[in-house]
Image (cartoon, rainbow, N blue to C red; front, side, top):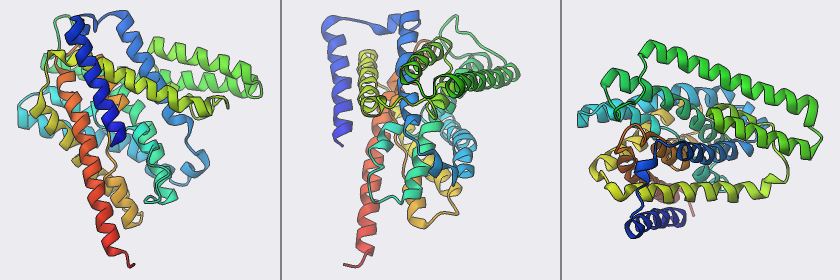
Length: 349
């Protein structure tokens, strides 16, 4: 709850700044500096999410993790998007369902020391929350282009693409991300692996290229092996700083208004979709772990930054996603509090 309070404060700072100064960030959301800044914040969050994954432990449940971050993400996004598009008679929710389909890795990181989760559940949740983020990032880019072409959504001049062309572009982008990560791995493995300074230089170059080309999945993969030791203590502070910077920026954009009913429904739908998908995917795990993974939905930096980027094409996205993030996290807190109370009452003294 303390972290959620700080996020709310960051939003209020952004709102207050916009109200006092009259700054209207919405007028600059399609500018190159804005897009590069949001890409940089997203890059920090994605790299930070995969930096600390225990690879040895994750290999034991690799089938579950791969299914969760591929099929699970698509199913969650479809459940959220289709249900709300029908409820609100607005196809934009098909896109917003992808924006909130991931689990926030920064929020999960705060839970990994909690003894409520078994070591296996902690590993699965850490990997799941780390890799569903870059998958939703890539999906969002092409889903946005398809939404413009198929439903006529977006601001005048927004670039659309046919569904078939979008799928081909999506596959090509995945290939480029994998090729980028593979090239960085070769340079690391056969050039700078035992040279800390050169490894740091390679990481800086990889981040710059990823931000420039928006190869976020590739950068997340880089976080699995290119891990300068000096970053271990510093990276959590950097990622938290990126989160609060993005949240202040969100507050600046909220000066235009908040779509509270739509946001509440989006947040509740995201949590409900995780319960459905989490319970189905973890059927071979103990009941306690299944419940904790099913009730694990939280949204954070990735949902916020995707909303910030989409605002350039689809005005009003931030007004829906901002309250949705708050609702999802409040629902997580309340649901897990009740789950813990239920578990304590069933445990003998």
